[in-house]
Structures are given as structure tokens and as C-alpha cells.
Image 1 (cartoon, rainbow, N blue to C red):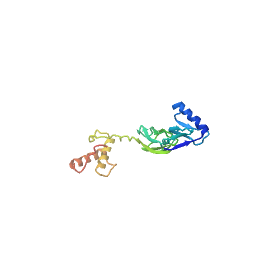
Image 2 (image 1 turned 135 degrees about the vertical axis):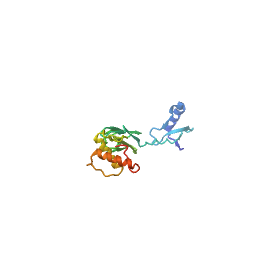
Image 3 (image 1 turned 45 degrees about the vertical axis):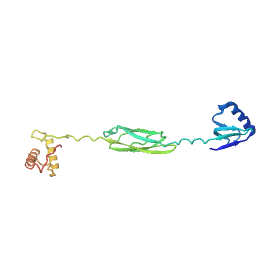
Image 4 (image 1 turned 60 degrees about the vertical axis):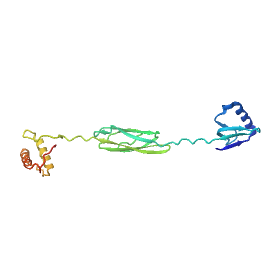
Length: 211
């Protein structure tokens, strides 16, 4: 704590009398007009018989530092079908003055915007203010993969099963058992043959559970 003794009689004597008369009316800071550097926040003051005013100054607390933005990035919705849109939103505290985006379709974005990815894509953003750049916030917009047609367990095809399904079953059987595909074979004859082989050697050949 620093002390400063001020002895400018013509100004201080009048100021000291005013302070003594006014009590707490002069709370805050003491400023002597025309006396450069004689201004401070004070914790106590005294006046002596010669009219000298002594103010005990205290150091003002440093200003709170300004922080860089801390951001999060969200995508709504985060899973879309190919060609659909998702909205990206950057939320920063304290607020950002500018943004740097990474990811296809984000050119010109400020705090957010919509994207239309055709494949699963990662996006990121960095917010900045007068104190500098903040963290890198990221999110992913995923493309939902539709299930392949005709999936799921099915019974073994019969002569009543459409030829297209019989061919799919034969192909799945051959793939599952590492058998070369023969597209020239007659579907139902090939089907009967593979069913016969599998029934005779069930531990060596596997039937497909889906195709």
C-alpha cells in the first residue's frame, strides 16, 4: 500500500476543510485540479495543522481479462439421408466476433448455416474475438445407409419362388461357400443341386441366412 503526501496549500487546505465538513460525501477518489498524478482511490485520509492532506492510496484491482471464445458445434439433425440438409450452429461464450469454418459447404458461414453433404462429413469451427482465437469445435453429419433390398432371413426358395429370388439365393450360397459363380446355369436346376450338396454335407456347406 502506497502513501502520498500532498502539500499544495492553496488547493489542499480548502479541499481538506470540504472533506472534513462533508463527511462521506467525497467517497471514491481524490483529485486535485491541476496537480498531475495526484489522483487515486483511497482507503483513508488525514489533514495536519499546516493544511497538508495525506491520502493513503490503494492499488486498483486489475481489470478482468477478456477470454477467447469457448465454442461448441452442433448439427441438427446429425444423421440425414444423402442430399438432405443439416443445420450447423456454433455456440460461443464469450461471443465470437468472427469464425473460421472447415468442411464442404461452409463458405461464408458466420455463426452457422445449412449444409447438404452427400457422404458422412466432419465440420469444425474456430471462434475469435479481441483476445484471439478460441478452441476448435467439431461435429459430424452422418449419411444414413439404407438397408439393402430383400434383407433378412428367408426360407429356402422353392419352385414357387420368383426366378430373381432363386438367383439371389444361389449367388449367396456360392459366395458363402466360396464356390465360383456360374451365371449360365439354369436357376432351379442349380438350386436343386446346391440343396442336395448341402443336405449331404451340412457341416461343409452353409445355407445363406439372408440375401
